[in-house]
Image (cartoon, rainbow, N blue to C red; front, top):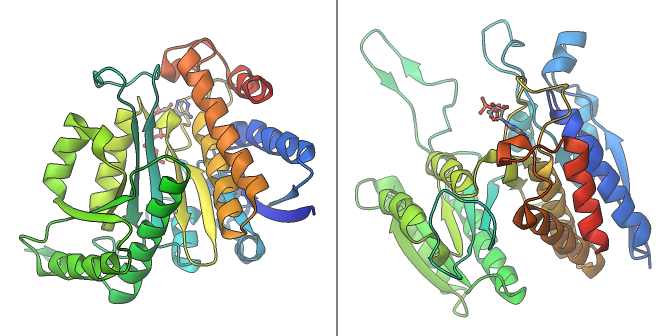
Length: 362
Ligand code: ATP
């Protein structure tokens, strides 16, 4: 039976629309060839260029389009020269996280055989883990509203039972799904600083309570400083890492570094009812309009979207296509002959995206 899924599309700023266009072409092609599902796309105007043109950064109608959709695809957003009058940047993606309760920031870190990485990987070792960053509270709780006086400044770190319980449940479910698809050992590591802060001891106790509900999975803990060290020394040992907002912010850039840069780093922000899929990188205004942006992080984010839709709707046709799409990008990066400049090649956006299309057919 064919089921249709509606996808809200935020085209983004700078290179955003340039990497979104080939990604939608690939998704259209995949769904046209698969009798099991179809996709329809609805544009949701928002962002810095939209603000410059209309005085509005995130129209209510676009939020409604996002809320009504089955999934949300969002390209890089924001422009350094276009800001609100108070000097802050335009970032509808952060509004979306808050409005739609997207508590789990999912950052896969994957380096397959043949892919370039700054690490010298021991023979046969591949990196394949997922970092889950809590995305609505933690040390970002007072974001933009910290107290600053002449002599001191304060920000608040907030850990709540409600969000942490949802976060940890999500982490264990993800570990189970990864193990079922042969990608992990079924292990969740809580990354914290429970030896110094009471808030993290609380975080850890909630993690332990959730772990007790999953005796079929492994659970352990690591301090955030040691995790940074191990991400460089033995990253192949991780499966699912779950952590607070600020720690996750920092470790996810380290993860992108392991993958050879932001051009290959996809992400998802997931809540109970909604999910946004977007590349980790920004809108790269320095190369916008030249047709040289790397589309892979955007395409990998679209692959994550298909996998997530497949899991949440128990619809294998979508999960299979998501996996095929991810593997097609991995083939192209391992082959190395059609890479964009940020990855050391000379290909433009269209050529790089076409080689993914070809790999899908092979
Ligand atoms: P933000 O704060 O919005 O995340 P940023 O200041 O970290 O943005 P990016 O826009 O991500 O910066 O760009 C950082 C550098 O990486 C720039 O030189 C940019 O050209 C390059 N870059 C980012 N994304 C891509 C991409 N998809 N393809 C090629 N180069 C990219």
